[in-house]
Image (cartoon, rainbow, N blue to C red):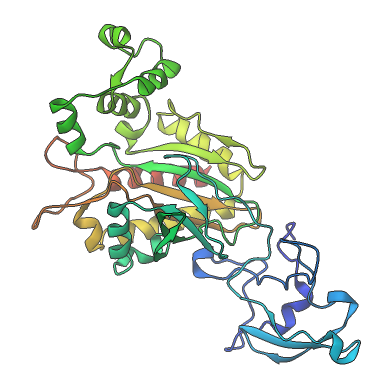
Length: 376
């Protein structure tokens, strides 16, 4: 058995669901979004935050369970009589037995996330466009393809979106952020840049770091570029323009991160990145492929998707050494509703004014690349 995947075998016999079907872990064939992770063990009576003990032998007392309810086990200790009674030991079926991992941000504005203080949740700095989208997605066919949204909360004078922590349920997760679509800027940004061009020295430096010859003579003289100019250049050197998506970053199980994919452009280059990412785990690759096909099927019937321009959104890939794997749509800060009566195909080429984003074009290519990898 894989390390960490079968840590609670002694409790397994008493964790039978109401229908009598055995739990699907270890060796679970489901993805975490179907909520079949192993239960979290009882916290230690002492030993500090994050310390966990086997519920069969807490403080040396032998525990006998009187009520094997699937959600909660009411137990008492046989040793030392009533002095050792513990009123309740909760074993939530959907919570994983794992050490806690800091939430990983591979792209976007740093500092956007903070801990929620509640297991299974994460806080993201609130923007009204994203709040609007998430609220509507909770009532759409895509609900199971995005992080669950639990409203807005206030922390330290700021508003935060309370979201499902997509890393919860994984043991040492590997994470990949894949930015979808043929462009990551809104048409309105192009219009504003033409009307009121604003020079960005930070983006000039980013451009220079990748290709010193990329800026024009005028841009070199100004030592600055406009944001749309930078973003169009950024998409042209990556696979966004050619394949309809690009890899933004990867975090490995050991905690190391890489965002050096700015010039990853061809199908073969992308395939090699995914090959390295899954590390030969055929089961993880199969689950990724199945999940992407499920997401595509759902997108094609989603009313929300038909009526929104989806810009700057990513697919988040997550897996671990226990072969658990999941993919979710994330980041809707630039997703905007279309005028009444307008819908998008999401595969047609983008021309300024048609608002096409190329999302399904990118997803088709992504599925094709992973299918090719699976056949190797």
